[in-house]
Structures are given as C-alpha cells and as structure tokens.
Length: 488
Image (cartoon, rainbow, N blue to C red; front, side, top):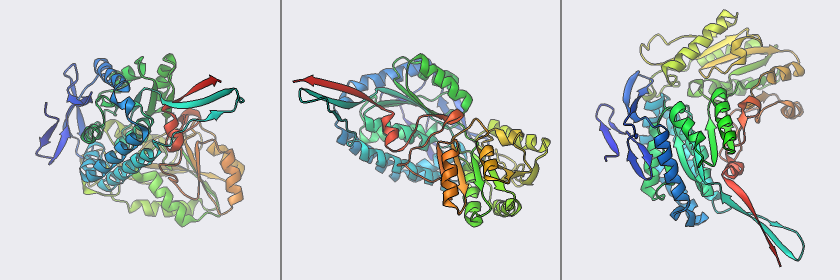
C-alpha cells in the first residue's frame, strides 16, 4: 500500500492511513474523517477513523514488540535510536512544520520552533536512556538486596491538538527511552504530524510494533485505548472533563495515568515590577499559539497602582500583532476549528454581558473573511465571579483583575480549582519566594514566563492534573521498580 499520497494543490505529502505494526493501513471499518485547514476552512485530506478494532490490533502489535527484538536492545542502543530519530526529524523540519501549520493553523515560525523542541526532547531522553539506575538496599552481610528499573510495557499516549508533535514527543520519547512500546492517539483535529513521526521511526529502524498510531475520535479510539486491558500506563493532555473520564478508566484497569489538564493561570504583577519585561512576557504568554496553551498567561492580577499603565502598554503591544493564515507566517494564526472559534467568541460575549470592558479586539479581523481567526483581545474591569475570570477560554483572550494587598493577590490566585502554573513579577525576591510557596500550582515562575525546558518537570495540581512530565521524573512514569533479594 502507498504510504504517502501527493496533494498537488498543497505541494506536499500527506499521510492518509494509521500506522500499526510497522505498516500504514486503513481503519478496519474503512471509515475516514476529514482534517481541515483552519486558515481556509478547506479539507486537507482524509484520515483513517480508527475504533476499538484498530486499537486491538495496535495494542497487540505493541505487546508482541515488548517480547521481541525491542526487549533485547540495550539502553545505550535505545539512546542511539532516539538520537537518530532526532536527526531525521531535524532534517525534515521544514516539511513537518508546514504540515503542522496546515493542520492546526499556527504560524510557520511557531511550527518550526515546535519541531526544534521535539528534537531537543528526543535528544534529552536519548541521553538519559542508559543512565536509569536501580539501587542496593543495605540489609546486612547475609543478604544482597537490589532494585531493577523495568519498562512498564505497552503505554497509551493521547495527544492534544495545540502542540500535536510537541506533546507527542514529550511523553513518547521518555517511554521509548525506558524501553516501553507505545500506541499514540493524536487529536482528531491534528492527525498528520503523528503519522510523519511514525514514518521517521520506521526510517531509522525502530523495531516493528514499538511505535503505533491510531487516528480517530476520542470517544471511539481514545476510549477503547484507555479501557484496553493490555495498556499498562496512560498519558493524556486535554480538558478537565475528558481527563476525569480517562482517570476513571485508568482506575478501573488499575493503571497509572499522567494527566495534564486545563489551566486558568494567574499572573500577579506587583507595583515594583519591571513593566517592560512583564508586558513582553505576557504578550507572548497570552497570545502565542493564538492563546491555545494550557500554561497561557491569560488571567492578569494587577496591582491597582500599575493596573492602567500595564494594560495600556499591553494593549499597545497587542494591537501591533498581525493575524493571518499560518503559511503567511504572521504573529497569530487562527484557532484550530469552528468549534473552538465559537467557544472563544462566545466567552468574549459572555464577558461583555457580565460587565467586563472590551479593552482591545473582540472579533474577527476585518481583512479575513474565511478561517477561524480571532483578534488579540483584552477584557478589563473583570470581577472574580465573572465566567471569563473562572473558566479556561483557550484562545487569544487575556482578562484583567485588580488587587491591593499581597493577601488579596494570593486569594485571587488560589481561588479557582485549577493549579497548573502561576507567575509573579516583583523586584522583592523575598516576597516572591514566600508567595511562591503559598500559591497552589505545579509550577511558579518568577519574573519570567515559560521558564524551563526538557529538563524541568511540569504538571498540575487540583483540577489541572496528576503527575509530572519532562525531566527525569518524566521517564520514571514509564518504569516500574522490581526488588530482588538474595540470602547468602
């Protein structure tokens, strides 16, 4: 079967099938679904619509691989394969970035940056593959006791659409480094780069069945993957509502699950903050990737004395951002789908209806007739009880609240069920460190946004998730400890 088909209108290769047991093939049912370019609302192509039957095939292939050649490959060899995979993806950077941009709408420069991040993630985990060590337990001279770190087995990776290849690599790279096999379920909005990833895995000789991709809908393929008895660990990034369903399914199967869910992330800007730095950081954090970022800086908690000046500066900077199709490489592309467009614009209207003031934006750019485009938007005069102050919008919308005291800022920051990330801007490092200990979030960033990288663990608390990804803790998600004792 032909793996790739040439789309002459787009001038690139589009994968059209799912990837199971080292082979590209259609869904068992023969069903497909359309993948849409959100910049033009046109159909890019048809993807295979996998369901439980396809999940069964993929999991069976992954399970066979745990007992085949993959099991005998040394940790150092696994690391070399991941280094090779990173090199292949780096060499295909422009092709992958173009497909990512067509699939989800983000500007090409952002997609290229995402591919760079994927390469860095693969290389970090490649370097760690042969450094995962057990320990010896001191039980006295008559006993030798030690631990082994073993791969958990077949792992499921349910990937979101906002960073399709980046989120895939974040969990798949450590799983492969640990010696696991994987079944990937990309979001139905963004299936293409996952299939190119599988093609790259085959190109470098990762053994048959180690990497599998089942495209399809969450309620069909995703639910079947979570419920499958041979899946031994689950990683999911997505909404709180779906995350609860995944966690319930994992609990029924007694499977560990790592969940990164939503965020309504507070950014506290004190009266002594460096406004140039904070405005620049928040501009990127609130409007980068069109605001479709779990860790976006979307909830601004501003000291009353700098509230107006800060928003004046932010609005001025945001008004200069350009909006257009992803391939035009503007500052902002569209949101990912018609559904997301309705969600984002609906929240803007809710905010205005509750009494918030539209400080900037609020609608579709006048020069764009087609596509799911939303202007950079700022709402101020927002009250803590407003819907836009409490619920994740996941679009290019920042909302601003005001505070007078540190205790008031802390109450606002901790007043929601979310707990993914938080930020503080102040020149008083003692105040910042004290407050960082009191804020309920998995990560707290001081005088910066998007701090960290492949080495820094990330994840949420409360409604924002369970477990940590990235860094060495991210690899431990895919290892189990076996204790061996010997009486002399």
